Length: 168
Image 1 (tube, rainbow, N blue to C red):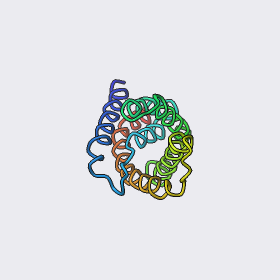
Image 2 (spheres, one colour):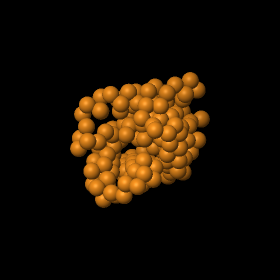
Image 3 (tube, rainbow, N blue to C red):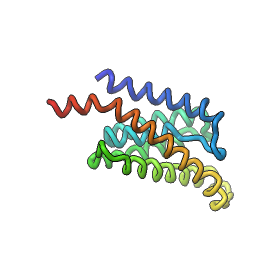
Image 4 (tube, rainbow, N blue to C red):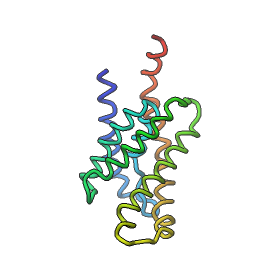
């Protein structure tokens, strides 16, 4: 029970620190992998809607405190993505990485699009093509590549719990 609550907190803090410090210095094409989004997707996928919602809220709130021009924007986006990805828990396969990769890439696209709408489109900046090529694609690719590694780590840490559930 304690591990179920402490492990996500440690993972969120570690991902937050990596995303905001280490990966800021090793940007590829000006993009930083969104590790907190990957963590939200991972826990939503492995544990379900409620975990995705809660992890998304706290991950988004951390980003809101650091980067947000409006408190709650990242939290709302992450909560929405975590909740929707949580529906995929019913089709969870441990052997295949296809669905997690698709979920990470599509969720990052949704995140980038929401961010574009709220931060650029609402201010009259309509350069969607430029933003898509120079911001969307590099971040989606970088996040997906880093996300596979983070997903594998989190899935490995979650496996002992699933074995215990199956034995009971």
